[in-house]
Amino acid sequence: MLEITYVPYLVVASVAVAAMGSFTCLRLTSGLAVLDVQQRKVRITQAAFALGGGIWSMHFIGMLSIGIALPIFYDPLKTLGSALIAILMTGSALMSLHFGTRTRQRIILAGVITGLGIVSMHYLGMSAISGNCIVSFDSGGVLLAIAIAMLTCILAMELAYQKRSLLATICGSTVLGLSISAIHYSAMLFTTFSVTKSADITASPVISSNNLALFVAVSAFLTCGWFLLTAVPTKKQVLTSETTPSAKTEVPDAKNDVAQRMRNASSSFSKAFEKDLPAKSPSPGLPPRIPYERDKTLRFLSADTIVFVQADGHYSRVGNGENEYFCPWSISRLEQNLGAENFIRTHRSYLVNKNHINGFRRHGDKAVCIVGGEKEIPVSRGRVAEIQEMLGI
Image (cartoon, rainbow, N blue to C red; front, side, top):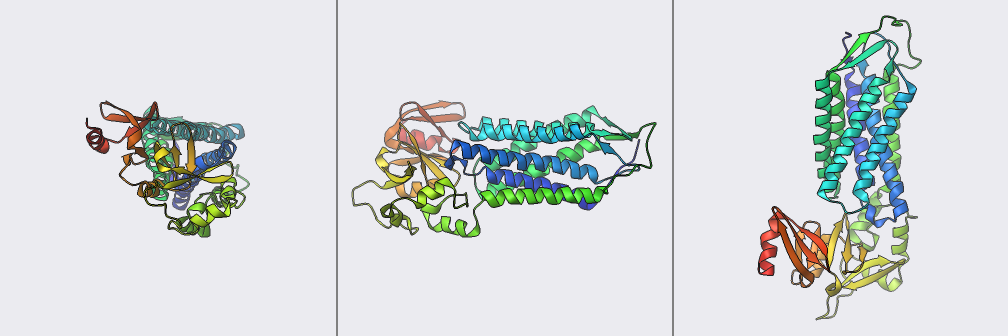
């Protein structure tokens, strides 16, 4: 059995690459609801390449950081296959989160799929080692890696997706980056390397392991940086989005469809959003008007026609019982404008019009309000008593 050591700065580089890939992925998938289906697919593809590529790069750099007595070689097909598995499985996890209704069960499922993708990538990548070494795995180490993968990836997804804020993204990506690294290095503790009978001691790679690892790390960072530059707001746009509701979009490219639509709205609508204060207050006795975007035009809904509001990143979706519309305001701003007289917060991601609540159901710790026919709106545990009191239950 061969004794192995690690190059410390390459270990640090591998963890940094994993965290960077995770952050890029989670940032790319923030605010996807404002995009059409085709744009959403493109963004998820980029995110899958960022996360899957980050996972593979972390593993590869981690392997190159090993100091071993003789050179080792990698089977090209298995190495490529391990990268593809990481990208495809993380892409599947992201698809489950961004198409259809996002629930806690889906978040957990996405964490499980991501964890399995990391473990599968790791062991397929390890099986690619050929030539001078025989690699053996301890069954206990495999089970430990799977357990770490499941638990930590679920935790990372919970942190990142319960509230789609920048802080949540940073926390989720940090946990996910550490998770990827922990899976790799804990699995390596239970991996042994043995010399083959026909070991070629004189063989040496064209490029040193250290230089190759640094090349992979720099390439991973550049790729992630390029993805972020094409999809994350510039500083100027972030400042604009904080003061001008009509500019609230996470996609910085001036060619972005949603941003272009908002800029092309009629001047009468645009003037009402030039400042972070209502330029035109509604007449006394009239309900406030809530902006939404449809058919390349900024339109308005009367508050009394709104059945519910759902948070969607820095934006919201408003439903009137028949359709749901994209609103450029955050749920906090909507709550402030709609007021507590007719609207109640049932969940940190939902506001409900009290006048449109048609039913209430509780099963164990879970509760829902039924609005607009059979639309079920979740009620958080801490708000159940308040809702029941309001309904006179």
